Image 1 (cartoon, one colour):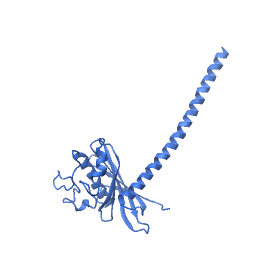
Image 2 (cartoon, one colour):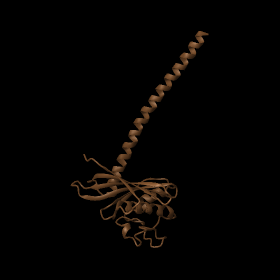
Image 3 (cartoon, one colour):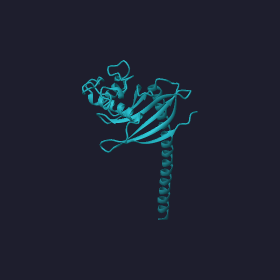
Image 4 (cartoon, helix red, strand yellow):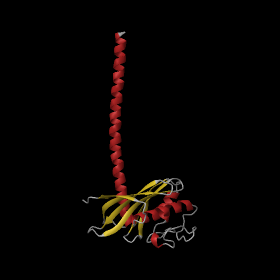
Length: 214
């Protein structure tokens, strides 16, 4: 009987030991993976900022997080990456803007010069139907059918509404073929980014963070 009790005790101790070891290993793997994911996200954002601002010779001088409450009571965070050239001259900002598309959230990074003209954009994430997301990433680029580069939402036919698809009254931007909803969502993200960048939204709460330059 004592032998049996001893065997059971040993088995429990072994199982507990294995569980502790596996838990420790999983924690280490998760920590390492988390750091890698964060580093990749930071690199993707840094590359995206250079892309939308149209130059590699820049520095991010500050990050402002602006929280806006929409009509449905949902809080949306916009991140304004303020950008300067190597000598410190203001180049504008790259704004991270999120809106709801046809299939889910659509996150856009858009670059503006100090006057609010669009310098470039890229999609950071989307939950649209496969293919539509890829189209949105190219459709509105310079020289394409829905070209918005160089446009200024504040100088649209209806400045209060900003950039709109041609199917809407006063719209000037060609929508993605058979995807008007995604196109409207995309332009909404651009317009919201513009409004937040120029501090036109009076219901926004802002938190600023300075960025140390190496």
